[in-house]
Length: 347
Ligand code: PMV
Image (cartoon, rainbow, N blue to C red; front, side, top):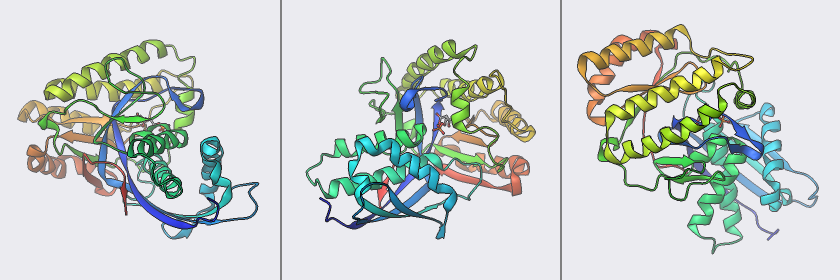
């Protein structure tokens, strides 16, 4: 219905992968399945306002980031619109005013592409639903995730659910390469309110964009074995999440983080995305774990920051440890306390 005009506003969180997505095929199809915790505090809040327009030949939008016009984001949005246009033909019938902000510091090295693309996608589904109010909840969330995937692969894990699987996997019911699905099994209470404290080690611009990074898995000498391993690790992680086996959780999660970085170190060209302080932190985490038996562990994204994961019960002790021993390795002593969250919310 082209006479429609209106607005919507949604927040969508970032997510942190336990089994990593690294390597993709055409059309943002992942080379292996991945699983992530949805975060609760690190979010993008995006409002869109849409007005019908006459000329339907091209896309029309303006974009504000934290209240300021941000030209540098236009090509990203333009190419996102191009990619999803076959699935959202109404895109060319409206002018969009998009207004976005993050709850975490800009250029903190925390990827905003996942939360940003998820927030934009769910807003577009809100618009689509306004002209089709009988749309099912299932369709709404699946398509929101499907669209987000076309914006940034890992963004499809930032829509709905505390633990999300993306990519077809033999033992995960309903899993698909096309969109993220909520982990279907019952999650052990050990993971209730699981904590993620993000240590900001390096806020510099990424040395390697994730597009380039994924591409380096083509012709990578270890790619085939890595993709098989991800399937095995996801199966093992499924078992861990249902049994609450934290020892196995630690082993799998840390191994996955180091494997992600090992893939970057063994590609051509090669990259080292950890910093000296990343390694200092990892070693401190290991000694603290050995001494206290507290089941904390680390994971990493494609950068130098360290995510420290631990049960809510251990929050006081771990934060005390972080404040006394780890903040010195962070840029401006910055860290963000986050925990498992539920996904996108209408505002
Ligand atoms: O969503 P992308 O294309 O930016 O890929 C990000 C991949 C990692 O964050 C490094 C791992 C993951 O599974 O989230």
